[in-house]
Amino acid sequence: MESDVPIGIPISERRKYRFRVQQLRNSLRTCVYGDDGEKEYVKHHIMRELEKLMLTVRERECLFPLHTPEKMSGMQKFRVLL
Image (cartoon, rainbow, N blue to C red; front, side, top):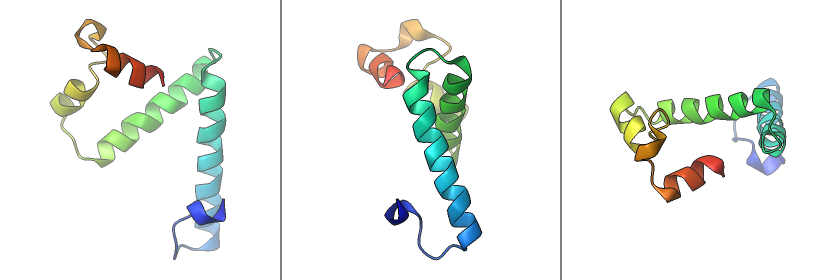
């Protein structure tokens, strides 16, 4: 949707933004059916967003201990699945 695009950016950047948003939406719809490529895309998108928050590796690992799933609470596992 046009209302989702940040205001004040050039038309070419708007197209790129809309393409990335559409690609993410499609990946989210498809990854639930077991498509490994789409799962990786979603996972990398989430990690990029966490990196934008400038969290340290330790802080990210505390939020989502993906490498040690036994440390994750039920709610954290649910959020990862969601």
